[in-house]
Length: 606
Image (spheres, one colour):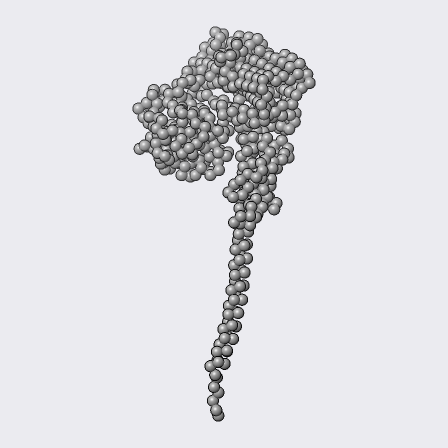
């Protein structure tokens, strides 16, 4: 049979056809793959853009929470640039203590697709309780009681209770040994208002930096009474324990000499001096080095910052670490924390007369008198003292002298209220409320405030009066119903006068009271003109008086929720009735409350 011969040209045709077929398959597959890659890349870019827009919206939520804590009247902001995009925030009120926050993040079409995300959440008041441990409490000025004055309840004084000529205290009376008025060891300058790495020590934010310590040496063998720290906080950390311990090879040891509590409620988001009073006062050796340790928790969002400087204190150094654990140098090394150590103080006294009926203490067998010295007293229950005279029973010396207790508010607490009031607007000059009445707050008044002529001032937000406050002539001050069960604050830098039937009341709900707070040191400060920080006569109603720098003078019967002052004077048959159930108080704003998101309300709406 003849063989089949494929000519070259026909062979080349078959090869060309096969090549074209394979190329078609290849390009079809390549096109499909390219389409898949393009679609996937577009999907990834869209997902990234959506995530960026959501991050912008959440940044807007965080900004809203921050701004509300700076100014409760904050209502939002528009098109705030951040990281290549913008966010817009709106804030609307649900009630006096709850707001709805809506934040939208927008990423414009540049290198990524245009994206927009909106989130919503409710924000409410997270109360940091401010503690008033005693219904009636004084600082080192103590009590001056005479002329048949009566206190219906128990009293605690960081100084003497001078009580003569038939004074009655129906509960217990405690007079603590007063703390020293001058600091033995200090590192307190220069003052700072913000943090740099060279001027601050952050602690309680990680396990490795949970605690801060400062070494020191005292100058005399005198009891240590109290310590002050220049602190601020981030978020809402819990209370911390302040310990005095031994030195162990240049670091804090574990031999505990004394301890006390640093109340988180007295620390705010701005730097300020906070006092920690020691419940026991052993005598330290001037030849030894000791350490102050602030032992806190550990949270990346709830921590403290201690003001500091480089080498500002010659007798010690700061360290960071963990109590009973490891310690290391600060960053940068060689920092000293800002602190003040107060030593000394005298001994306390209750009474003062040379006969046993000068002061009557107690009305039940459990009501006691407790001081270093008790003189001229009739005590129903136990009498704890180291020395006594002209008393109805002998001293029980089994207890050591009582120690001072911290007053409830720090200076920085009060500054937060001032800032809040100022954020609501400023009224220049004096402000008078007459018969027609007025509703006011939050507001700062640069002059004096007068409520007179039977008029009613309804407080709808925190008030700060740079001058004096006078409530007289049947004038009335009350909290607006929106306060609910919360308390409200009126702050004055001048003296306060309540007389002529002037009265105070809360929102109308149980547990709500106005707190009338003055920073005045009258009568000893310039410009007092003989006035006390607070002068009251007649029934002032349900109001708490705080004058931690000055004197409160009560010359007539008054019903109060609480009174705290450096000194309280009562005479002429004055009678003080207060809310004996007072332990803690919640403020709807200011240092006792902060805005935070309500759990379970967060939602992405688009």
